Image 1 (cartoon, rainbow, N blue to C red):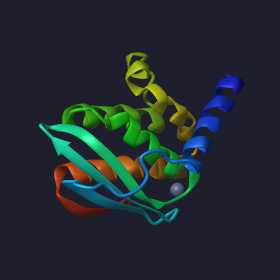
Image 2: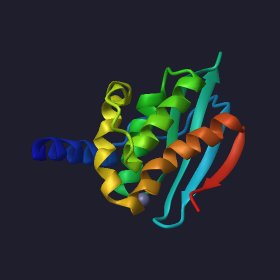
Image 3: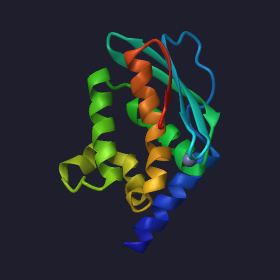
Image 4: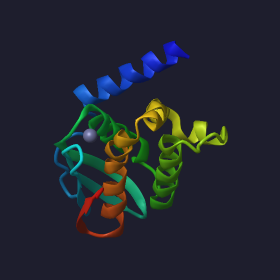
Length: 150
Ligand code: ZN
């Protein structure tokens, strides 16, 4: 179990230091900004949606290791998904990090997002981990919007 925890921490560190899909996105047709005043995390998510599918997704901004890694893994996890699939993934992720995600069928769907399972032990970090996802949701529902965790 400790080995697994180390592996998870390593992956979070890796994604926070070298975030994937970081930067501007040409031709984005959905975007939103999110802010977590408790920690100072601030991100903008750019998405190109076509036929209800997330074709491209990138993000900009800065935050703590947890929020940056979450944004990075969120872009990897949601790219190529339909809007409905992305929302379902967020629901499963939210359950995982708020502690009531014991259902094993969720593990497969979550994939790499399981690295955040330890976050549930640090309630103040839950907002860091969910901020990118709230921002994604806002971007998909509205064209341009700013969301806050508070
Ligand atoms: Zn944070």
